[in-house]
Length: 215
Ligand SMILES: Nc1nc2c(ncn2[C@@H]2O[C@H](COP(=O)(O)OP(=O)(O)O)[C@@H](O)[C@H]2O)c(=O)[nH]1
Ligand SMILES: [Mg+2]
Image (cartoon, rainbow, N blue to C red):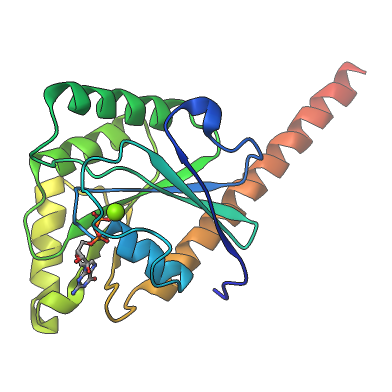
């Protein structure tokens, strides 16, 4: 996708700070240091707009980036960072849970996983949780450049098995270093936006028909 406009909108710490324009949102979840900020930067062709590796785990905020005045990429705080306190961990859980549960414009969660490693307990919990609430998920295995191409398949299989990956979910192989997967991920995002727009239109038509019938 051609990026014509990117704006950092807000580091939101409370729901009343989330944007109200109802543009479709794509949230990125994953453990600290997995490469979320790098992935955003790669997606939007800006080297340093999303901050990489600044005090991992400390930023209990949702960072909103608006792309082409059409959609938001939402960077979640990373989980699984050892140094956060129990209270911080709970706050994090509540914030994310509330967001994922209530956020109407949310279209999909991109769950970012390091291709080199087996998913963590937190990764598995997050995936199960998203499945439970029927939130569309795409698993993005990133840092693909860090292992030889010949091992990609084996690692992806290992990760999918470990997550009990649902065949209806999507998967994209990614590297913020080489740009692998960038076009595929944009295509998926665009497809998802168009699908939900079509569904909304259909629902509207159905509503109009039933109104007419009631006369
Ligand atoms: N080789 C390689 N390094 C990456 C990739 N993605 C992220 N990194 C590095 O991993 C570290 C953590 O990345 P960051 O984007 O800050 O992770 P975040 O905590 O999830 O936002 C940084 O040093 C990045 O340069 C990738 O695809 N390939
Ligand atoms: Mg980050």
